[in-house]
Image (cartoon, rainbow, N blue to C red; front, side):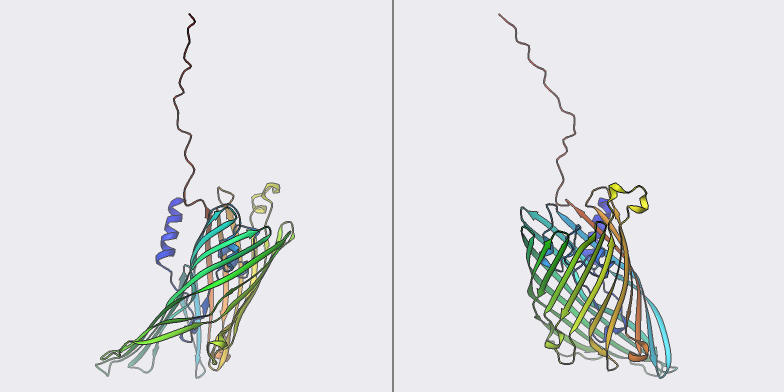
Length: 401
């Protein structure tokens, strides 16, 4: 198990790859909101779910849970189907997808807790090649990625959890265009590379009342400053300053045990994109999930002991395609496999996501994604092994005079 954890940590830290979408030419169509794999299989809800070992810190107040060191990471893989329609002619293509969405560690210090999370914030990757005529090919690429690193702190006052996090965003947006023809000896090639970064901060709270919890959080807007470079096959331009604006993000969450073994969770996230660009609309994402969390000690059969969940989410993307705004719909499901410890857990899930409508946008994609997440604890150190054999001295015999 230790080798598996080390491998997943290494992959997550080094190989945060991007999800695929045909709408990547328009912006950042894929976005993660700081929730873990358990949440992604439950309608992407759970920012206020304090009824489990939660390793997703969309709300920095969620960082305060109990007196255990928590570790979490995950992997998303599958494939995406693209569809396009040009002059009434429909084409389709299937592409592989692989993403490592987050890595997090959280350490308790009495009623305080500090943590770190490195995650994919928004991304979009796509490549396509089109035959213009019998002799000419046109190739385009879009590679968009914004990473987010959070340093978290939270404090618990009875049933109230308060949190703050320092957030650092960094990313890039690259475009490549190439046209080649057997009739031309010199190809047409252009590329635009942009990179940007800057910090901001977040605030959050979670209030619990018996078997119910509500939370709210906000990540403040920030302008990511950077540079852009344009080049072609035969020339290049001087590097220029550029920027990308991230909007105010506000999130609300609810989680509750409506029955002893039945949990309901709901989340709503709002992003004020229109404040950054009049050509965009304000985006939001709403999700609803339900989970069966069995009391294992009371179950006889193994299949009664497996936690099961499902959910649905809808998201309004901020940009247009073919003059119309793009929406996203996702159905999800998941199960959990408890490991040796009561905290160690393997989460498995599935997502089916659609973006756009072919007849409206002339583009559409649908993704079939499998989710794997690991939650564990006590990775900072381990208890001292006191099981080694010890030499017990014999009692000294005292002679009487």
